[in-house]
Length: 355
Ligand SMILES: [Zn+2]
Ligand SMILES: [Zn+2]
Image (cartoon, rainbow, N blue to C red; front, side, top):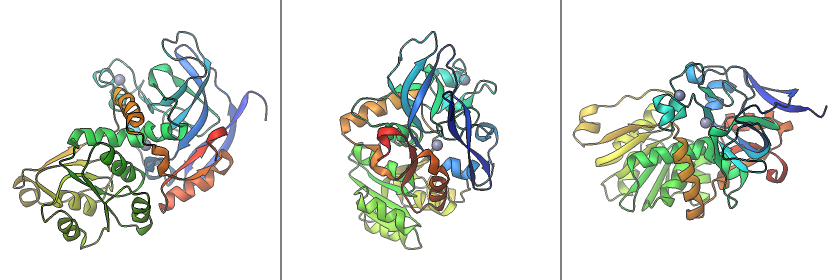
C-alpha cells in the first residue's frame, strides 16, 4: 500500500462489509487527523446500515467510512486549533453539528437542526473504521491518561447515551434500577447505574447469553429471562413494590411494557432503545401510578466530558464490556458477530489496543 493510502471499511447493506484503499485525508482549518486506536460497533449500525440501509434524515447512511464510536490519537493538526494538539488522546463526539443552532449551543449536536452542516461520523461523513479519521476540533473530548482508548470508544456513543438517560431519571441509593435489554447499551446502563449509587440493579433479556454476561461480570444483582414470569419475579425481588427507576434498552413493545409495569408508583422510566413501537394502557400503567416516561437521545458534549471525569473518579472501565476484539482486516467477522447478538461489545482495534 502506498504511503499516503489507508484501509477503510464501508457498509453497502445486505450484511456486507467492503474494505477499500483510500487516501489519508489532510486536516484543514480547525481539523485534526487522528490515528485510530479503538472503533467499536454500535447497535444502530447493525439496525440502520449493516442489514440494509433503513435510516432516514439523521440516520441516512451516505456511503461514508462506517463506524461512529471512534477514539484515537492526534497525529496531525490543521491551522487554527484552539485547545488540542499533536499526540493528544481523544474521543470523538460522533455528530458534527453546525455549532450555532440552539441545540448545538446547548452541546447537543445530535439534535443539530442545520441540514447542511449536521453530519454524523460514520453516517454522513467518514467514521472510525479506518486507519485514520479526520475530525473537527470542536467535536473532541480529551481522554484522560487513566482511561484506555477502548474505554473512550465506549463513551463516544453508548456510555454517553446511557449517562444522559440516567441523569434524566436521576439515580441514587434510594433506587432499585431495572434495565430491560442487556445488549451493550443495557450492560452500560447496569454499570453506570451502580456507579451512580443505585442500591440494586435488576437486568432482563430474552437472550440467555446476554443475561449470562451481565451476571458473570457482576453488573446486576438479579437477572431474569424476559418471559411471562419476568414481572412477577421483579416484584418478588422488590418486596412487591416494583422498581423506582427503569431503563428500556430493548426497543421492543414487550420490553417497554415490562419497564413501565415493573416501575412502582411515582417512579421514572427512560426509553433509550431505538426503533419499534410500544402499546400500553395509560390509566393503569402510568397515570394512576403517577409515573413519568422520559425519552433520551445520545448526550451533549459537555456531559460527555463530565462522564469521562466521573469514570476516573469511580474507577470503572467501560472497556470491560468488550468481549471481542478484531483488527481492521477482520472487520467482516466483527460485524457478523455483532449482528448475531450473542456477545457483549465488539470492535475494531489498532496498535496497543489490539490485545
Ligand atoms: Zn451509536
Ligand atoms: Zn447545529
